Length: 210
Image (cartoon, rainbow, N blue to C red; front, side, top):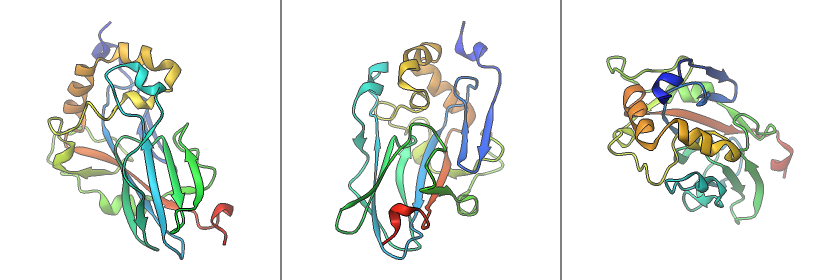
C-alpha cells in the first residue's frame, strides 16, 4: 500500500515538552530547529549530536556525531544548537569544558527536569506567513527560512522524519515512506519552515548547582 494512502490520520502532540507529530500515523514531514536559552548566572557550552543519514536504516545504528563545536551561550542568551532534526544527545559543559550533564533524547519530552520548553520564546520567533500554502500544525511554532525549502535541505545528511522512530523499527518505517516520498510530503506540508523547539535550562536542576 502506498504511504500516501496509508497515513490518513494526523496525530498532534502539543505538550509542555514541545510540538511534534507521530510519524507512524501522519504524512507530515518537517524540519526542526532547536534553540537553548541559558537561564544560569554563568556561561555554558552546548554541543548537540545526531545520527548522519546514509540512505539506509543502518544509519540509526551508527554513533551520533557532533553537529558543531561546543556553542557558547552567555547568561540570558540563546543559540541554535541543532538544525533540521531533533538532537539525539545534548551535552552541556562549563566554560572550562567540564561536562555538567549529558542528555540522551531517547524519547521526546523526557528530559528529567533539565530542560523546559519555553512557549513564549518560541512564539516570539514564529515568523510564519499566513498567506503561504504550508500545512501548519496547530500549537506548533515555525521559523521561516530559505534553508528549509525542499531544494535546499541536505537530505543526504539529515534523516528528517526517519530519525523520529526508534532504531529497531526503522526499517519498517523507511519501507512505508520512501526517500522520494518524504521529500514529496515535506514539499506539500511545511516547505520552507522548521518547527521551533525552544528549550531553556532549568536552573533549579541539581546538576547546575554550584
